[in-house]
Structure formats: C-alpha cells, structure tokens
Length: 108
Image (cartoon, rainbow, N blue to C red; front, side, top):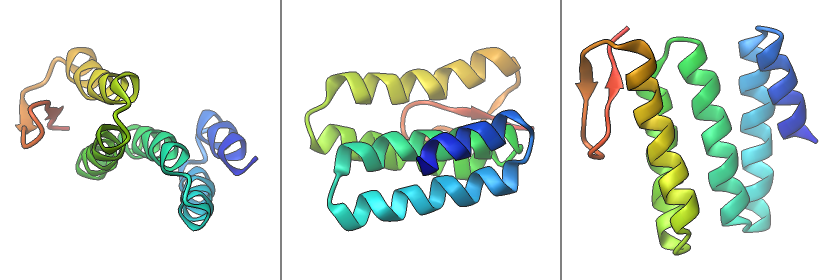
C-alpha cells in the first residue's frame, strides 16, 4: 500500500511525499526480511530520486537493488536494474559522471 501511495504522489509531482512513502515501505520490507520486495522498492525510490534530479542517490538505490537481486540469484531483477541505469543515460543524452557499477548516470 505504501508503495502504491509513493507511486501516486510521484506521478502528481509530490516527490518529497513520494520519497517518504517509498522509504517507509522499504523499512517494512527490511523488518519482514523480504529481500526481493526491498530490492523492488529500492528501484522505486531510485526512480523518485532520479525524477528529482538527484542522480547520485538514484544510482545508490539502483546499486543496492542490484546487489540484493544478485544475492537472490534473480537474473530478471539484476537485468531490470541495469536497464534502469542505462535507460536514464540514453534518455538524457548527457555525458556520464559515475560508472562504478559498470553502468552510468548522466550529469544533470
């Protein structure tokens, strides 16, 4: 439910509220030990950070999600996370500033 609220507020442009809902959902997933859901929620949180122009935080969230998916042997999750990183670079057509994960996020 919190994830859905985060998505809705993000679509409305209320990014700080969206960040709060995504963060709370991640805390719950962690407390339940649901690593797959935690990684999925980190992707959403990264998307909100990307939309707000905070590319470093987005990269950090995507990298955390990718590590979790890899630890779960989730090829789909790992590839999906990599796609998010590469899609942003293609969409922005700007030079990259960070490539520690083998993927990059463009400078704003």
